[in-house]
Image 1 (cartoon, rainbow, N blue to C red):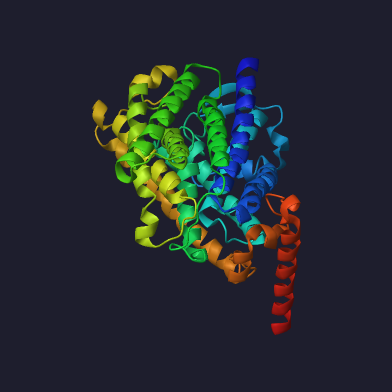
Image 2 (cartoon, rainbow, N blue to C red):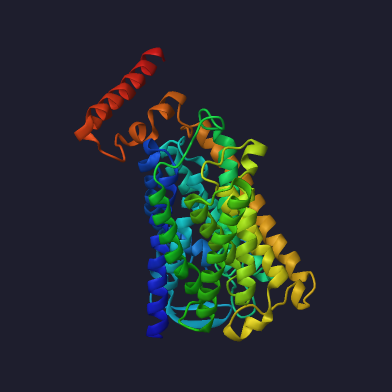
Length: 446
């Protein structure tokens, strides 16, 4: 065992875990004050659910050594068989324990469904969300992670079909961001629009919280990308560098669009631009040189800033711009590899294929398009079916009256800000009482 590499991957796993609370703050600040706790809880309950599923069978489905192109086998059920083993990727043995690799990948599995929650903010039942996370992670994320991240043995046996095809996705542009973005679009359609959208104002209630969340995401993302090198090495340094410069440039690209279009660069735009850059560089961070990462950031920041307006044109209520940032940003980053990916970084352990602008032709770009498109379609279709079934059975969408009362009060009997000193406590209990009377009235009516 290499203790340095093991320490780096363990620390990276902790950094990636921090991203989910960071996401919770980022999303929580963007919603109205009466929804902030529910937004936080949707992320935190995801940590609990996915951790259990991953231990019981998720890691085995994603990385089981005897599977096929679509899923692993069940050799690691319960993680007992993973103890005292080293990590092997594409026949190469990494000198870190398999359990360490498993915990690192667990954090990816946690944040992916948590990302989806932003698309249905303000209007989802907590039980419906919890059941959805359980089913979606099992049916969608675990198999897709196998498609993208499992390279099989030295001969490619048991590899995921996208990995075997040669799709390059270093840290999850397809498996995480396109996957979550497509699912967010499907759920936004299934649950429908928030009351009053788009005419009503749904402004962020706490922009400092948004910036705090974005900062935590940026910090944790170094573990997300550089940690995917599975060692403290040159590849980690390349991924770290590209992550930093792409994110910084995307922030500038987004607020430049705001300045030219609206006359004012905003703090929400700066936070969203940074996240857009993080998303776009995720698949490409080990496939491009740093100057290309700067260009990617500028492109991703500008495109995502423009893409968030699509929901108004197309009529779907993606509450917190999951589609505009994660789906669009993930597609941009994935396809960018086909244009600017280069074997020049192979000396650091990165990509071995060249994109269009490095004389590699359109072969790599075509593979990247297949990877992005297949994950998008699979995630959208399965999510649409799951969301519809949950909504028709146990219920997924809040009733209009409960939505007006506030999802925090109705689902959790709590508020994010206790204002008892100025009468907030009385208002809180009155609102809870009103909610209970509403439920009683429904029962009498039924």
